[in-house]
Amino acid sequence: MIRNRVLRATSNPGVIADFPSRPRAPRPLKNPLLHPLQLYRLILRTHRTTLPPHLRTIGDAYVKSEFKLHKSTENPIHIIGFLSEWQNYAQMLGGREWMGKEIDKDVIDRMSDEQVGQLYALMKASREDLDAQAAEETSALIDKITKKS
Image 1 (cartoon, rainbow, N blue to C red):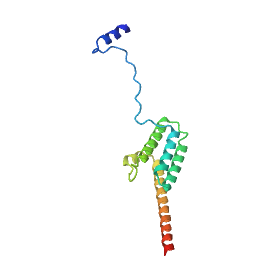
Image 2 (image 1 turned 90 degrees about the horizontal axis):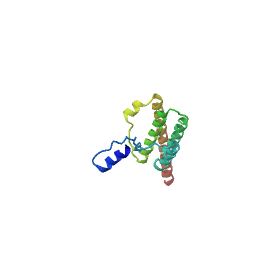
Image 3 (image 1 turned 180 degrees about the vertical axis):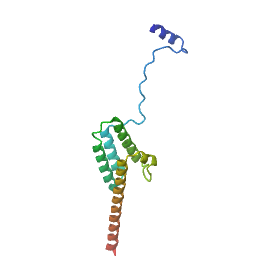
């Protein structure tokens, strides 16, 4: 019977054979998720190549703590969300799209209170670090000017 179907299909090229349909192989994802360790290394490498030193220390510490906190997570939905957001972060940082970009209100609305608190703490730490760096640079510049005088 199968032989007859094959013969009909090959003898009449315009006729579609009534073969039983096979499931198709799934299409590869446009942006497959990286293994957590690969993603972690990619983020640290991206920090090393794109961020200024004062932001790199904050970023590295934050990434390390987040990956440690989520290491024991067993919920697949949380794992996929965690990895996909960090992968988006690495791509955004590597493309330098982050400079001067504000976080969408929708993204903030979807965050839990704890996440908003973490974001606020990160913003506060980065501002304090920038203020400290600016004070050091100003002090060094004043010292340099006074030594010349």
